[in-house]
Image 1 (cartoon, rainbow, N blue to C red):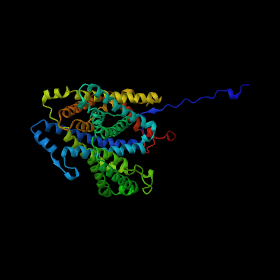
Image 2 (spheres, rainbow, N blue to C red):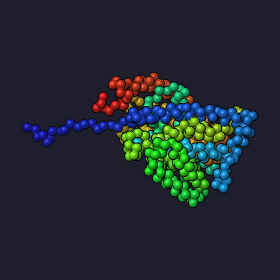
Image 3 (cartoon, helix red, strand yellow):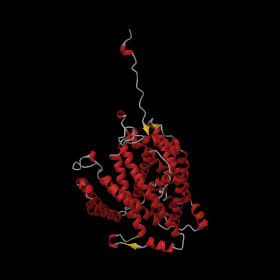
Image 4 (tube, rainbow, N blue to C red):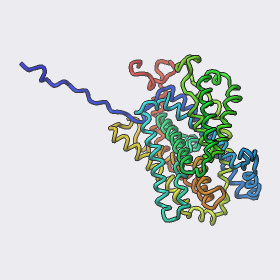
Length: 454
């Protein structure tokens, strides 16, 4: 008789983690709404960029530059700035405020609060920053210290332009890849603002910085203690939180730290979960999501396009000027980093995470899909333009050449991504059909139903 203790127990195969799988239905609906708004914002952004280029290369160039350099503001508070500087330092702070809100929302209450889901887009974003920066440095290694200051220019992804590309090509990109692209871009923005704070800040005035932190603490206290009040009364947020936010911004600007950093800090200070008075976390969106809905149209429809209008205008000077710009090592480094470095960084980081964690790609997807999104991440614009101005100074020869390279590199990345993703559109259509099936008519597609409910 066999000893039962010696009978081998059947082993359950270890479960394999899946990356880039579908998120929750709630997250899908929220992200889809954000991407629809970003599509409209991308169209406005494109129009503003084209208008700036036309004005800078026509008989209106003198008027364009005079408008960009027109100074307004109150000098005793160090706020007499040109309109271009107001757009770069002020309006972009709104954009980074939204980035702070979105990132905190994802990691506190979104699907990325799970480490298994967060690690892939975060690693991809880090890879998409490191590899382009290294490529730029290698190309400009013998060009002098001044050109090396632009190493961070090709590190950012412009989500508005990237989503606008998807809309133009009519791609039916699966929800998991859209969420991956959006999250990667948001983490990119956080990394970019960190780079700006640490590498493009020179002289720091301690007193204004300390005062900014004090006002920021007051902002944090009010948003946490009265989150339901500010969430249900829009006028209160505009009349109380907005002035406090402006004071924080002005003090950070006066301290010497780039003022857009204030936007991210203010975003991080807003609570994500709904307060007990508002019914608790399960009663609906918290203050962060409420403010995001209110401010995103202002950011996408006004702040970013105005910045692009004042920043993207560069006099090219015909074919000869374009040739001189694109043969500058600065421009070569940016174009190669955006078109080649960005996809390599994103794809390589995703692949490494997959292999080191023994995870597998979602069965509906293939590595060519990840590569297509990685190429699309090379569409860098808004933050890249900002870093170019910080690195070289607005209007300098290197800055003008860098801006031409940003436009050319982003366009090439968009065209290459179009070829890859359009080739997979029929496959994406079949995935979309399965994702839309709702057999029990409860308003939630079957793919988002818990297994036990199917």
